[in-house]
Amino acid sequence: MSSYRIVTIPGDGIGPEVTASALEVVEAAARAHGGLTLEVEQLDASAERWKRTGVALPDEALAAAAEADAILMGAVGLPDARHPDGREVNGDVILRLRFELDLYGGIRPVRSFPNVATALRSDEPIDYVIVRENVEGLLASSVTRIRDEVAIDNLVITATGTTKVSELAFRLAERRAGKRRVACVDKSNAVAAYAFFREVFDQVAARHPDITPDHIYVDAMTAYQVLDPQRFDVVVTENMFGDILSDLGPATVGGLGLAASGDVGDAHGMFQPSHGSAPDIAGRGIANPTATILSAAMMLDWLGRQHDDADAVELGRVIDDAVVRVLAAGQVRTPDLRGTATSAEFTAAVIGALA
Ligand code: NAD
Ligand code: MN
Image (tube, rainbow, N blue to C red; front, top):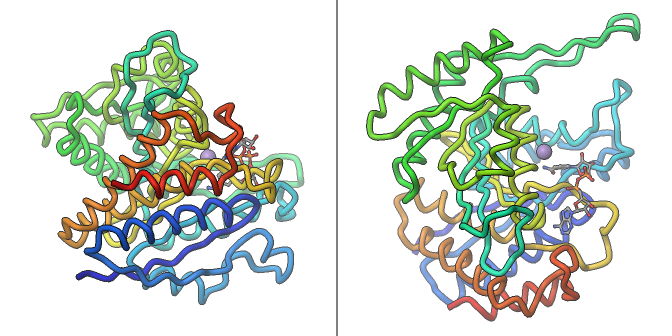
């Protein structure tokens, strides 16, 4: 039986609430199905910690995260926890982990769920994945301010980084039972760095003749995500574009409370809901834990593939199926989906649905 060391970073706001739900589900699934055990260590890295101590992510926590088999994060950040230059301190945790552990691929599925209303005109199922370049682009540069008058960020696109994230996107398209397409989303008509991103993407595409490449400008992309999202399979894009498109996509199919994500590299993986710490509903026990539960399922799938462990892959699938069953039944729903259930009631329903 395999055993994995997981570190959790519950973080701020609703982060600890949704992380606890996801862990409860994973532990129940592991108990019911056997096959693996988890050793869980909780790390304190948060905006809350920064307020107390001036450090959001201590070096020891970074080292522990680097040694773990995977990281499960809730959400980090509070709107009033900011550096003097205006940036929130949550970057000290999330961006630093992405950069230091080279988590270059942000994998963000956009999928419709049975019996969850979408904001779209067609009821045809939606199932695509946004692969966000996670460690370069517009988020790679440190802000430069001149005389409190000019602030400059650089858009950094490298051949190596673009090749790695494009390869990840094509491999994903090859193993998904999807449309076998990868779309490169950029603004290459107007910005040279994006033209370079596209050029490198095309070189990778040429090595994957079994997959059809597409090119879409980012502005048109936002319209397609609303008007014709069924056309997509895998989408790969620069860091900042990926950040924005991966909030838009989930908003069309039930909201951020359902949106899972994984930040993965060759050696490390960090899994977290796409949403933030939701300070407006924190502490009330009504956050939707679905996104975090599905992120934990992605974590098990990723661990299984990394370690050639069919049991872990299967456990991820079992958890995903249970969530879909509860949503499809429609009786137990949190307020963001117009229900009245608490996070605890929803979590219990998912555990009850683990087949
Ligand atoms: P947010 O995602 O926290 O909240 C946006 C809206 O969605 C809010 O109305 C919130 O109540 C709702 N919402 C989000 N998750 C929900 C859930 N699981 N169930 C029900 N409703 C949910 O975004 P924000 O308000 O822009 O940011 C709040 C803080 O979170 C900021 O400090 C921000 O920097 C941080 N943040 C962190 C991450 C992360 O940890 N990866 C991502 C985005 C934002
Ligand atoms: Mn974001």
